[in-house]
Image (cartoon, rainbow, N blue to C red):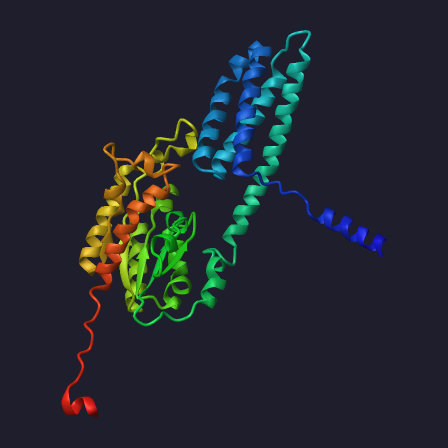
Amino acid sequence: MKAFVCVLLAGAASWAQPTALLKTAGVNQLCVRSTQLMEAGGVAIPDLSRAAAPVIENVKQACGQLRQQPGAGQATYLLMVNLRAYLALADAVPKPFPFPDTARLQLAELRDDAARLDSHFRALLDSKDQALRSPDRDNLERYAEDNRKRGRPQPNKPRVVFIGDSITEMWHLNEYFPDQDFINRGIAGQITGQMLGRMKADVIDLHPDLVVIEGGTNDLDRGIRLTAIEDNYTMLADLAAANKIKVIFASVLPVNDYHKDADPALEWSRTHPVIFINALNDWLRSFCAQRGFVYLDYHSALTDEQGQLGQDLSDDGLNPNSKGYRLMAPLAAMAVDKALGPPPPPAKPRKGKEASK
């Protein structure tokens, strides 16, 4: 019996092969180390320093793009090609004699890094292909079990669903709105098109009185056209209205670059230009006025004198921290009250013969 178990364990170990796909931190580490090795190679081989200068610059640019957009295929390919170009130059230029053992080991390490990057790039292509063919592109499974367990709304207790991206998902609504039937349906990284795909399962089927829609930040990050984002906003609103669900649109939040010195990937203004954020918010404000929806203006409350997300309101320049959410909570509460309107007056007791019937 023990031998049989050992065979099973050995077989399981052989199946559990490590993935070739590097995590974001692994790619960033590879970038840093590869750049160090290439620059060190130029010290040991003077001719290589001159010949490879443009290649090293290309590698740095590719690494910068990957910090801004982890998993970007074009930037990964640029990094891979230029690492290979550097190694080809290293093989071609004359080397001093005797050639230092340290330099030899550094070049060997760089070849290992290039081979590792090749494997990562192939795995990245496979993952993107799989994502395109995914049966759950919009991540409907994320809340499927919780949706099944939800009962109908309670009488005299309005149900409000918050649908959005990480800004919504990271908000612990129960802590800010105790004893309220507020349901969080945010998913980090989602674009408005994916929220549209989740609208029936994560909003309509929960039978809310009101939906608070927050989205657009990730659309900007991916370079989606403003008109396409506006179309998605419109369809989200149309679906809600068709199902007699009242609508609040939250503004797109500002971003800041205050953390970019600690991590260049946190220079959000490059992918979230202020002019685009303002354009979307202007459109949302006008759209809400035309349709009779409530516009929830987080943007004005969270923007500092420099026109950025307040430094003390976010730990990464993109998502609010607890202080940011504390500013947002009363704004959301007022918007919900406004959208739901005053409660109906209590029924007056009937008198006389009518009351006895």
